[in-house]
Length: 521
Image 1 (spheres, rainbow, N blue to C red):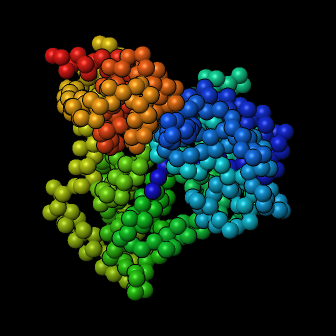
Image 2: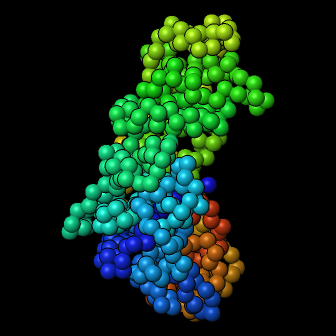
Image 3: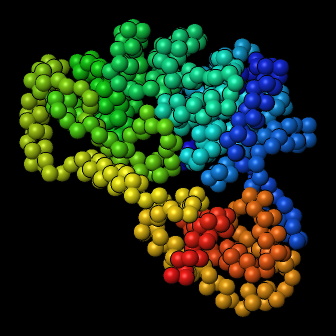
């Protein structure tokens, strides 16, 4: 489970076409302060640190790579881009070179990885970004590459329309020639590209619906109704529901999408696979699924905090995916559509009246819902999230720093959220007590080289930039007493929270002085 960014470039892109795009990508990587991993040998030990992105050479290959950015120090997995495309993959696929849209399709659509139509691109990146800051910077670079190669590249992954808008703005701050949004953000352009592809049956609509980054709403549904025949639409939805069992999360999600696009209930009855695990028709379950969408309510709560917001500019994280899994039972399957209950009853009776007691099933459902009206997991969860977001907004208006990762940017006069300030006081008190160790006293009697060698040898958890390590070494040489600031950083065990506090303490001199003043109060 993770958050990814992918870049696919068609095999028919020549090195002459690619080189200026590569140069521009490296230019943006430096402007965005992307960071790479570096290994040093110092004092007889290995030191792992960060360095600003630069082009590197390895054998006969030149490339740039990144693991994060040195502005936020957020990092995840390794991503690389090569200067020469021919060096990236030795065994290219032969035959016709199709649109790279087909290369990104297998992970999201009905198309298969083994389909020769989908095997016509160089695939770059593809490792986890986990929603760290460099996710947006890579997306910005990907948007630039897609724009410059004009249909011969596609950026994809865990991205949204809002993220793409933000990424394009980020890139255009530095580019002489502005870029536009990726094709997946423009429904009309995406449709024209897909119609030109060698797709048949349900494939064109399947690819459009799964690759389009915009909202899946009634406007999108009207576009589909205008540009696809009834036969194409029915074939698409029949395939969508074909292997989904009534009562599963997958069925409820597809049902919600179906109605949100303005599709017809009567047509749905002919499309859905009503068979249960034993092959029996589950009319009762299907009718209850229809009722659970609240289609019969004109006014309903449509909030769903578990759904990815396609308009959001911020990357979602692994915690978003974990929440979707953990709170799946609190997902809101109410649909943004309305049909009077009398009409629903009429349609279902006409379709299934001779096969089951439709009125009784509906009446029983409504009776049970009335008895259980106090139980509303989606409403409870969404209320909780709304309250939490309001509290966060209130804190942001009252304090300059509310999150532990933001301590890195502390400036004199900044006001910390009280609970965060208390955490800092407690942890730094513990941190400084480490200097009471006998080994610290022994090291204080030794040369500065011995102190620096100890830091390198002991460091296991703290990832600093290379230049910061050398600043620390110089500082220890000039002022041995400052070793007190750095000795504990390699002696305490750091977790995902404490590492950011310690990082701020050893990197941000203003925050260090703030902590020292707090200790003196």
